[in-house]
Length: 339
Image (cartoon, rainbow, N blue to C red; front, side, top):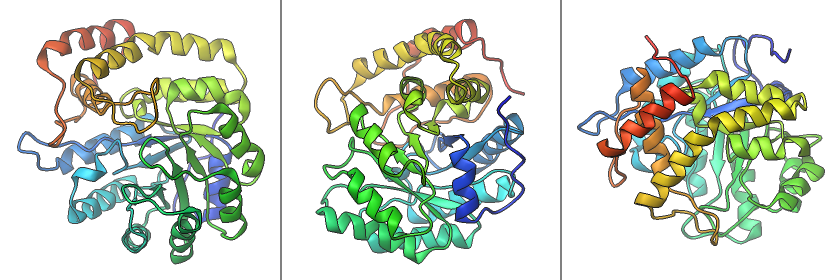
């Protein structure tokens, strides 16, 4: 059976890299907002405590205020308070690697330093977006962040949001010239590119599948060491069952899990098509929509967790769509209410 030893405290980058190399689920936490759009910090504490309790003995990593956590919608002060809240609740029981992204290197460095100061184990930083740098600027962006901190850094290589992309040779240069790159969150939809990353640095730095359960199931055989999950916020047992099946090469089990999840995935796809628009800059047929977060938040509320509302300009799942979701959650996935 695949199990980690208990975590037990702050990890230096070397130990964190080893932890992730053995396989992990990085749970990108949703940020609960109240009806007035203020942050529900008590709800965030409850959600975090639930994950820690539900995932005892499992290789869990918490990532608050990433894209799934609506990082673009929170103020700097709110970002700091969210990070500190999750670190404090985690209390060294599981690693915390908050999103610390910003297109400006100086701001990203300041955020990474703050995360270090309050006890985070690392930071995750997405590619610069809006105005994008050339290849040298991209390298220097991550090099400056890595050099400014003693905790781990996870580059988030996401071509959905930026027209720059860290190619394997740039990643190799970064790994060669830093000591605290602990993993890469890789979101390329091109399998050959993913495999090239794994061949280039995968023996030194774990490549984590950034596109969730379906993509982990489809690429586990290539050597990804785990994946990033939003579903783990409310069905962590399923997320870890899939991780173990993938790392153990149990493709029959993976297929069973994905067939079970398929109605939920199909519901999300239907809602994304219904309410659109696609937010990815990748060409068709690659489709992405923020409505996945609205569906996940509604799911959490149904289960007794604190999903809360979306923050404007993004909108909540409509009441007319919740009945079908409720049927899938309780009758198909057979999830149980919490508390």
